[in-house]
Amino acid sequence: MKKLSRSYLTLIYLFFYIPIIVLMIYSFNNAQYSLVWHGFSLRWYQTLLQDNDLWISVWHSLLLGITAATLAMGIGGLAAISLYRYRFFGRNLLYGLVFILILSPEIVMGISLLILFSLLNVPLGFWALLFAHTTFCVPFVVVTVYSRIVSFDEYIFEAARDLGAKDSVIFARIILPLLWPGLLAGWLLSFTLSLDDVITSYFVAGPDYEILPLKIYSMVRLGVKPEINALCSITFGFTLLLVVISQLVLRKKP
Image (tube, rainbow, N blue to C red; front, side, top):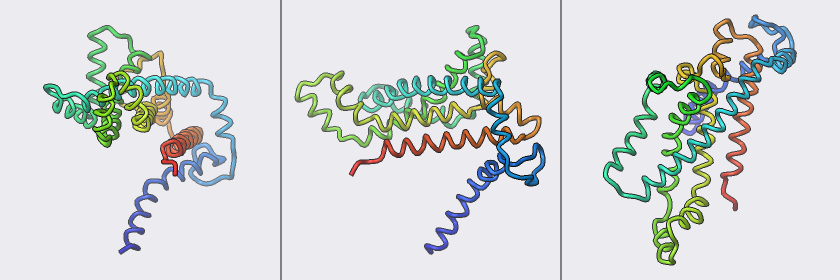
């Protein structure tokens, strides 16, 4: 039974990672369009480093992702704390609406935000993208942080009140130190979601602010070039680095 379980797990992981491995291998292929191996080469990484328009898109995506993830972490963290600590009318409804936002199709989110920006005369570009990315990242932060905060011992807060601590002191000295792993996880999740979003961004990006996912999408429509393989390999390596850093930061000390 153990061998069967291990074989099944191995097949699942191979299904997930073989396409990524193939992509990374072909990023070193000395051929532009052929799938036949023509020898090892770093020419596509050199071409990638010389593509200024592409690096502008990378900078736009990093700026957008960091800003949206930070805003979503703040808003979602406060929302999760409020849902946990306070009892008010419609609390369960609000918590259920968070999951509806997570499950709703991205195209619905993109079209609805486009209509909203059109009604409010908000120009499409950085600010529209920032608002859109923060909007779809907040529910994920709420769920992540809430799942962390429900594991707290409620008597900690009661003991703090008995000792005369105000809500601001409880928040700053008890909740935040205990909650920071959940906040960090929510930030990393939001950053990843923002960095690879295509559908919602397609509706609200505008012509003057191009981000990396839309840039890759426009390049792929003309054929998958090894330059794109090189870019995707670097992006995957960067994502893997973030995962390793998060695991090192969040692991429990002996």
